Image (cartoon, rainbow, N blue to C red; front, side, top):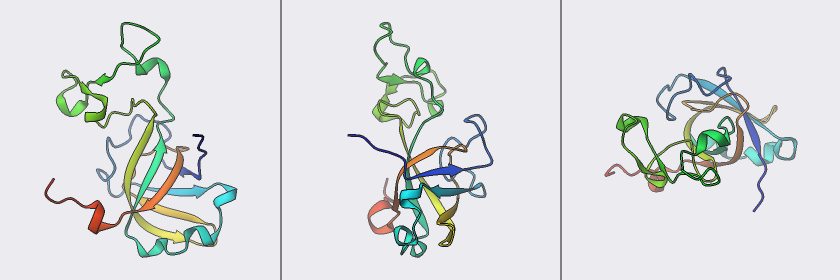
Amino acid sequence: MEISPVAYFRSPIPEKFGLPRQSGLVPELEGRIVFEPDFRSPDALRGIEGFDYLWLIWEFNLNHPEQMTDHPRPDRRSLTVRPPRLGGNERVGVFASRSPFRPNGLGLSSVRVVSVDFEKCEIVVSGADLADGTPIYDIKPYVTYCDSHPEA
């Protein structure tokens, strides 16, 4: 499967250092979703103003492949990581973590919709954990009845 970005994120933070660890941790941090020409149409945004939150599926584009392995064999990636929430000392499986070092390098963030500019075909959001220039591969509305799990 080949995928291409539908948009890029514009943020005041140009690199991964200084970014919030997770979306929503700095709710006042705003950024813009700027669509690629093929998707820069009011039709693509129709109805999005009716949602308070969106899911962004994006690429960890600032990670470097050489940082993704501490496996004894250099041609293989480690399938365990040391998440900061566990103090960085305990290893867990990559799929039991929110580590940016993932097999496919995709991130998922929930962001709040601040405004939708149908003329420019841009969305201003807040609470994102994306650096400036991050490629966004898909955007989906956050739907409370199926996306919220208060019992978790």
